[in-house]
Length: 405
Image (cartoon, rainbow, N blue to C red; front, side, top):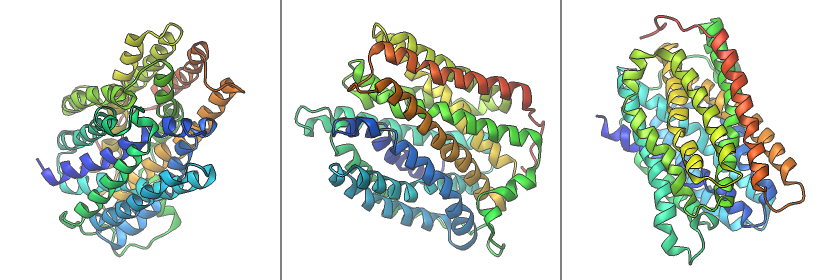
């Protein structure tokens, strides 16, 4: 089914998985342990700006496939330079910001391209999106079990090899994007405005209370998500795990299995129940991390990682389909851009700063958190998700039918 879209999705998330789950370990091993939350800050800053690319360029003036290609090529070249700046933390962070400014718009672009090519969203999108998860898994396995042969007895996550892997994969996807069938810009001829570029027109177009509650909940939920992305890799290192990136792929393995069942879940459960299940799984994940910390109970920690499949699929995949169903075809880029803006942008930006503040509060003048510190640390995101779950369950009402088919 749509092999070109499947390969595009595979490479898209292979690139992200190559550096996103290893950058904190790399920075900590190069004297930047107190700055590890900054990559997870510049990443959402770029996500906040990404709707300008999606709403202006991809929706109005150029085929999204061409925009995707150039953005990945530019990002790939920037990532080649990043490892050379480890002795200059400010420049290191600035280059990561530039990289993310090119990369983050591509998350919405691959969804926009995919939704323009398929007709049965609930059935077809998960089957294509699962290849993105397989790409993320492949990146983690490559880093932990293959790049280790070239890292001279240093765990590969501490080396620059994952960053170079991400760069090369980005250049490959950049070139491949130009071979994809062109999609006509769906909003060509429409007048561009600041409101439309960041998706405010979509808000006005939908205008329902539940739609606003959904977006607000997505924003709040991504705050505790930043704790997971930023500090799980450091937590695993302290807990004695060697193949850090490889262990984290267990979450994506469960994600693959669930992704294949998503069409059934959409029919049987609906949007609200799926999102509530996701939130419940997030609470359980952080509780397992907390319980597994004092005595380093690997089984509990691994179970927490495996739960990532439910956490991610039932929230993000459901959310992308929900957003696409709420808008007409000409606004698809704006809708996906708006979700990226709210979740990966504002939510992760606030979350990265809060997570970094909490981590540094425990870190103080120490080199790393103690196991008792980690037990308390994971309690914070668990409470945050619980608050979001209560708000969403009481306020969100799922419409029986979508505005647009």
